[in-house]
Image 1 (cartoon, one colour):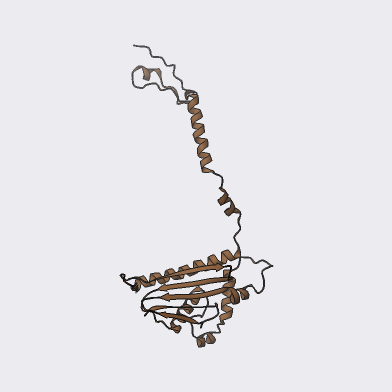
Image 2 (cartoon, rainbow, N blue to C red):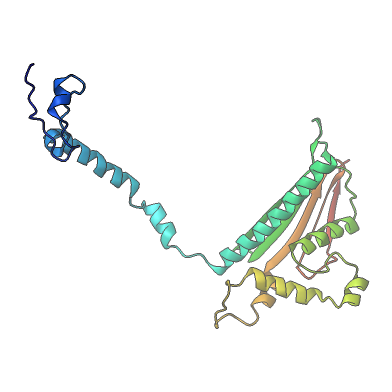
Length: 245
């Protein structure tokens, strides 16, 4: 029988196998792999790759993102974002309604397309105006002042003005005050969550109601367009109408 050497490196590896298993050809000796078996250059390469991956995963902010991180949001930003989210939700619900009901819009010289609605909310510093606007594009519009005010009052009601879509008689019956409703809504839009600063002006909501916030509805279709705008606590506002000739 041929003698087989059993001088196999097993440091940090599995237990050494018996000489008999090697001798009878049933097992080939495999040295255990340790850091001592890996060439120095390969170790350096692995460390470099690992370091590069760490740097890539933890990159420093660029000047643009650093500025955004340090720039604080204001209560005006928060309030406008709340209003925009609510107005866009209302417009989306109208879109879904038009699609379900098959309401269309016939553009001149084009095939009819589904009617649509979209909302726009933004503050303009030069005029100190926060405009909340709902735009509607559909056929079969009744181009009257009453129709524009009805759509606007529905929009006010959806925004959170309780009773805006009711008649004056019903509002009186239920004790609903338009100004109180508007001030409460403004307080919800432009307040911190769960706390209130002592320096908050007592007349903040009154100032916003009387001088800043405007709610508008614009609607256009195959026959023409109209739009009407006013304060949160105004339910009958002037209307502009343009008809197609």
